[in-house]
Image (cartoon, rainbow, N blue to C red; front, side, top):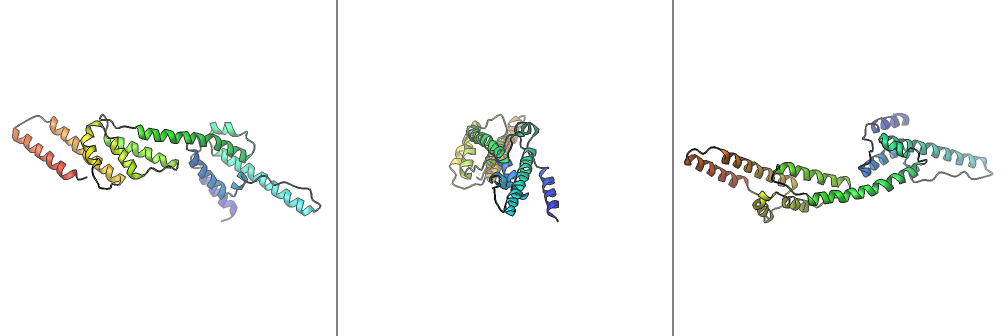
Length: 239
């Protein structure tokens, strides 16, 4: 496959990637950097334009002129690819920036700062989040997992034991006894195992609500149901 065909394939694949719309700048920047590196254009971001110096040697002058011409062409292409990787609303804002390096620095200056603010927001949102009794615990657990997943987009990693301890602390008021029991256990859990434990507990609580709502028949039936509930708790709550 020729270099021309390779570049064409790369550009076609890049066209399918999500365009930058003003959020998750670091992730978009890494993808763009990889794309420009593949096309051998990324050097213009850090290499100034070659200067043509006066020389008595025409060959030297010609070589310098060729290098400058190539740099200008690559700079134009690089800038075009970066702008093409943006939504139209951002393209309209930045298309007038003349050089690629200036465009790159402008984007970094604006969106790196916003990413830093986003980090603070994400951390605060996770720490302040509390589960409520009016919603499924597993549904709220999944929301917290998604928050932790967003941390990775900003290269932030929370220690898993701290994350799980936080999850337990966030359980709703009606889970107070369960929460205290979990806190005093010495076993180590993975995040998946913790989610399974929450799921089992929520399932048992849902079954108990059904039994409570059933019309009372004979005392013997109620005793059997109570006995079954106790056995289920004993067998399933092995955390």
